[in-house]
Image 1 (tube, helix red, strand yellow):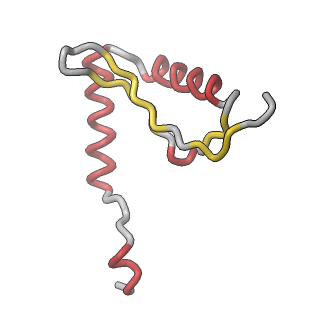
Image 2 (tube, helix red, strand yellow):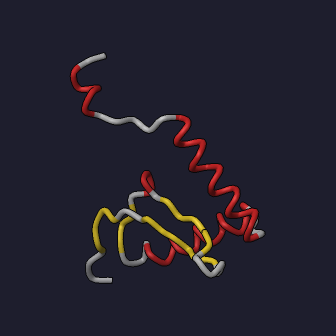
Length: 86
């Protein structure tokens, strides 16, 4: 292991699997198909991209439940820059 590897934390495959499983469980609880979630995500991105340039590499959009079991859309959408003069 090199010295730089000590300071850079790579996501573990178990962490990725755990995150994916959480998404699948939430979708199942809310009875939302992958197709609906994907269309919702694409629509959100299409609207936001009218105003900003989006970094799609680190994009995260998911639906979960609040404490009172109502659905919540959570979006982490990194912005590269704002569009000017639109």
